[in-house]
Image (cartoon, rainbow, N blue to C red; front, top):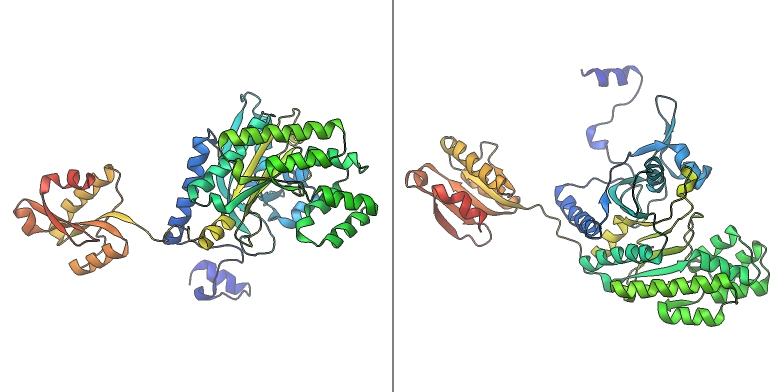
Length: 448
């Protein structure tokens, strides 16, 4: 009996049958055919990142829990996979990468700006599992550090918009934009000082009724008339240019509000230069729950689905300073794969879940197996995906296997053909065959 099983039984543990073992709730296995579709999506996102000049980085999957407490407080522990390691240290599986990136920026003061980073890796959050929300999930994080202008804001949104254009769903996605400084200025203008609790109520506005919204504001000490004024202001939304004109007419007069509205006009002009302004709407009720946002905030929504926000982001100019002795302006977003997958499936845009192979090298007998391997290696060096016969399969079984792995072509290597100086190449889709001089097979197939 294997030692591990014997030890478990000696300690009184039941050893489950292998058929009883399943993945944890909110965690998913992705077999090669499904992962091929995921990889196509990831490739599109990462390709766009590189086109916009973002540089890929790698960082730990586990960090000291205190790193996240600095940013999010003690409550973060309840929402994460946090534990004490064998060295007695409190550590956490990354629920997000922003604190890690802040640490990296603080550690390397020699880095010139702008710093443009992206990374695709897994994150973990202990939260309720629902449509488009898992406990283990992929994200690609995009951040620009060291630039405070709206040019960086526009580039971040343009990058996100370009991803959806490449996926063929740009007409089904919109970005809702707001500015936390603008909202702060408007609230101060109607007599509501800086109040994070009021911000949190505004953040929930779209999810509750008007009466609930007004009631929650009153519960935070806002009088009824002011609550109704907040309701009217945060109802301003729509196409950016016209919404900003409406806001200018209704906003209380103060210098901070005027500056923030002017900044949003500048952002609109920059987005227009990128050609993504049609995907963007102004919405004064978009707050994003994180207290650390300092300027632009935005969320991507599916316009033809009941999915929650696909992802969000914003400007966090003060956050980096919490992790060291210098302030560095920053803006970023994290691309959410699970909700985007749901959207693509709903719209019939999800890639085919199928593995594919360029060439299968079929060997008729053991005597020609080495020659088949030589062909396979030549094709692999040419960049093709090639499989060979690794088991004692018959010719018919090999053709069946080539069909199952979606091989585009099969090279049939047999003694009789080789004695005649040729090899048969078959197109698996059409069934058409060509006899090719045996010394020209690799070049011929590479040029197909």
